[in-house]
Image (tube, rainbow over all chains, first blue to last red; front, side):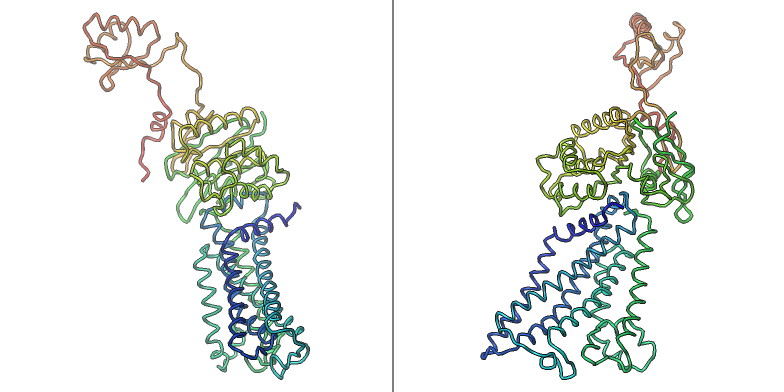
Amino acid sequence: MFNFWKLVQNENMKIYRRPRTYVMLGIMFALMAAISIITYFVNDAHDASSWNMLYNEASIMFMLITVFTIVIASGSVADEFTSGTIKLLLIRPWTRSKILLSKYVAVLLYALGMVIAMLLFGFILNMVLFGYQDATASEVISPLVTGSIIAYMFQFSVLKYISLVVTTTLAFMLATVFRSGALAIGLSLFLILGVNTFVMLLATLDYKWIDYLLFIHLDLTQYLDHNPMREGMTLGFSFLVLAVYYAIFVGLAWYVFKKRDVAA
Amino acid sequence: MEQPIVQLQQVTKRIGKKTIINNLTLDLPLGEVFGFLGPNGSGKTTTIRMMVGLMAMTSGEIKIDGHSIRTEYQQAIRNVGAIVENPEMYKYLTGYQNLVHFARMIEGVTAERIQEVIALVGLEARIHDKVRTYSLGMRQRLGVAQAILHRPKLLILDEPTNGLDPAGIRELRDYLRQLSKEEGIAVFVSSHLLSEMELMCDRVAIIQNGKLIDVRTIKQEGHDALSNVNMLFEVDKPAEAIAVAAELGKDAFKEGDGIVLEANRDFVAAFNAKLVAEGVLVYGIRVQIKSLEDQFLEVTGGERIV
């Protein structure tokens, strides 16, 4: 089969040739720099832990990256429908599944790129401002965790990225089904950020079905910190629930995209 | 006979209870500019969408170069270049990036070919500008460029003259005729502009309410001196003129401010002399060609669809 990578290259071009992509990156860097620099000046002794800063910033930035990736994922599919370019895109010797897959791959690569850029920038920024310290995870995070802070940050990022993938897939699916970027972005943000605010409340309720809600499982770092939201939940169980939701999202997006009459 | 490049076999499309396309059967040979004519809402675009696989058929079959658009989509669509409705491009990319985008999706389109196509549609000066800044005519040219990048055997253009200026229309027309004659490709053009189709196409299919009404060949040849053609005489007293015609053994009928009769060159001169001699004032004499528009209105019954 003719190079599938070329399709991904096309999707990348459509992401990185748009100014908004760099505006997002700029916002993220500016926000991180602001947090670090303000801390630097507020703290006269300049003895804040660089790892602690990085951890706090990463926790916030993952939220921001989720928002940006939802925007990119929704736009990737919905913009083709709104602008009508979907017609030109589909009448090529490629199956619809492969075209959808190329978009999905490009979006996940974007999310990965943002995470790596954020971690690298945060690391360099904080090391420059606060100096490198050798630290264990228990000193920086909580007494419950063990091991080196680098290993902790790595696991933290991987688990956050998995949640990011599930969220992105949800936005991608909504955009494919509704063909409207605004609706997909709005709905995903509401579901992810809105529901997250009272998920703690939900978690305290003593109903079995709450165990199967997507939102309870979206923050996998709860297991890293040995502080699960609900009694008796394990990482394996969370993975399983996420996998089921993921399969539903992917299946729905794929089926709708493949079958739909394009009359945009 | 050579296998037709496109075969539509009893194509039907129903959306809900409404039948959009009803049992459409049509063959297109290579090397012809084929017009697809119909009033707004007659199903032209729906048919084109089904031909390129954007819409599924309810029943029937469409084959392009012998490959079914349903079961062998990739082989079938490889031979097709198309603009469906407006030439929508990625506005935030340059014209060149748009072409690269579509070139990447088909094997064998080289950088030289992209340059060649840009020159062909006359976009050299603006190709590295963002499509956002293009006029509709320039977008139309870019649309044609992406459609012919991979040298398709079938070029499908939906309302291609939309937004083009008269010079652009003429250029496109000449270019399409050249493509079909020299490279032997089939060009399928839809339009509701009758006069345009008359100049551009070899054959025209007329569709109305999703049904194929007629396929006719457009005559490109002129009229020779001996053949009888319909002549319109503009006169002040049509009734007397008709009487004069009857004396000469011709049936004439009144139309507007004049009369129409079938005549050759010699008869026109003789009849004119006779009219003047009889005291009928002749204001004008001209050949009355039944335009495609008249034919179209005739077969569609001038029916309003909305």
